[in-house]
Image (cartoon, rainbow, N blue to C red; front, side, top):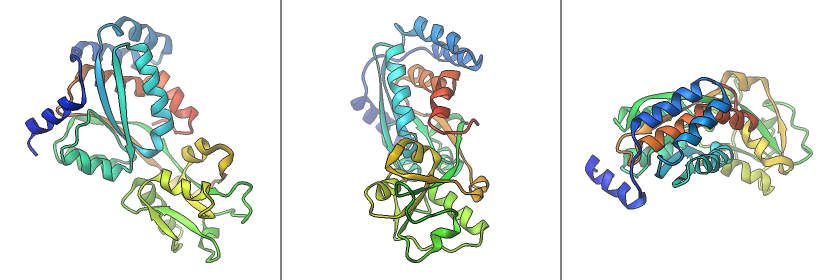
Length: 274
């Protein structure tokens, strides 16, 4: 699909006028200062100037925190709208390179981001904005007494992993390889939320997911940390995509994600600082 065709498809999805790049740079500089009050002041001054819809493709593990940030952004900038598509980073990257209309991509690993940059679909250099670490999700109360990654190799346990092509699956495999453990799951899921859901529905006894997902699930699951996860921490990069209809507004959303306010939401969800 040509770049022109891709832009035309985006036009059908978004409306409004683009903001000037100067506004985005202003938002970036205020967020870099590390002062949430300064960021808020900048947002207030630009709120009547930014407009249009920003379509964000983001890793499934970002669903709760990015939804919160999207609402914050819309409140700070009346006339804007943030639309999200959450899923496995590899599938999202394939959609972007296939011409799907999107303005921002937030991936759960540099490897999946590289799919987009190698295709020439990123505008600028992606920046790491958070990191995430694995954790074992168990049934509430951990009735199977799972205490380690090795315990998941028990053939009597129904364990779920993310597909190896998905960042959470690749990280889990890295941890298993480092520990010289072999694990045969009952299923491989296409994203981390699908893996977690198997445990929430009691269709599996355990799943290897992210700390943020265990945190978001609350009392629906139990959580077991394991030391091998420290060797398989994923960096999360974010980038503006080429052909974005409202470049200034998209840059301003990225600036919010990277700002002190954005980091407060993300670390509160269990993400690690970059």
